[in-house]
Length: 252
Ligand SMILES: NC(=O)c1ccc[n+]([C@@H]2O[C@H](COP(=O)([O-])OP(=O)(O)OC[C@H]3O[C@@H](n4cnc5c(N)ncnc54)[C@H](O)[C@@H]3O)[C@@H](O)[C@H]2O)c1
Image (cartoon, rainbow, N blue to C red; front, side, top):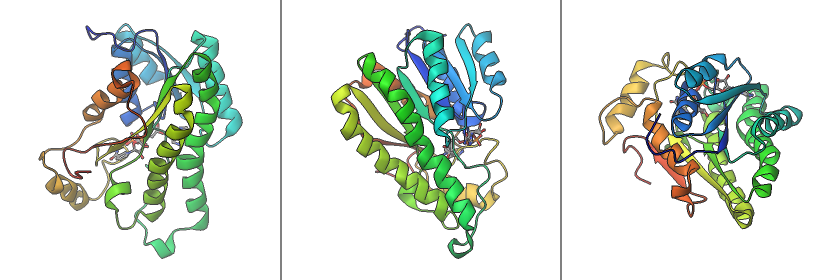
């Protein structure tokens, strides 16, 4: 537990929180006092257990972010638990499954599925939680994009396109919801070592490393400070921004 409980009394939903970066966001937000709804299509018990064993509070709810009814149930689980939703991290993504593929060879069904999860999914989650944020006088949403949306990446056109859409959705939503004191920001991570990326080609990882100002691997923990800041009232007048956290690869 951190001394400064800057997220005390806030209920925060983290999608894709069963593992990787979403799990790191959940643990960090909990350590600053937030109650965490671990939302994932896969079991999130490990994340809940890690939070509880450090003295935090968390529940797991199963969600498929691409399904409207499922995201409504996710929001209901949060409201039933604490009566409010202060924050949402849209972190779940069709990512681990992405195969490097020349753009002409991407299958139509893969293109549709990745847009369903990475773009429509964020829209559905926002639709489901923003009414509660409006009721309590505001909230903070963080959408997880990627450095590839800014820098491009060969063989990843479908994924790059979805993460570019995330940047644009952040700006559109921020303009539309600012009147309700709902802030919307993007975090764009660099290449981060997680279970999802550990089998990516080694030369690929090395290229990212060479391009960085800070010459070391990026870990999920490198992203959490920015997320905690954006969820907290310390960033009360920050909205619509892209926060690239990649050790100084892209200087944006
Ligand atoms: N790891 C990286 O290098 C990197 C770089 C830039 C951006 N990102 C982004 O960060 C986020 C997390 O990446 P990660 O490396 O932790 O990946 P990960 O595969 O470990 O985590 C993704 C999580 O999302 C969940 N998920 C997938 N589809 C879902 C759905 N339809 N509904 C609900 N949950 C679903 C998965 O079960 C998983 O727990 C993703 O948005 C990814 O695009 C990752």
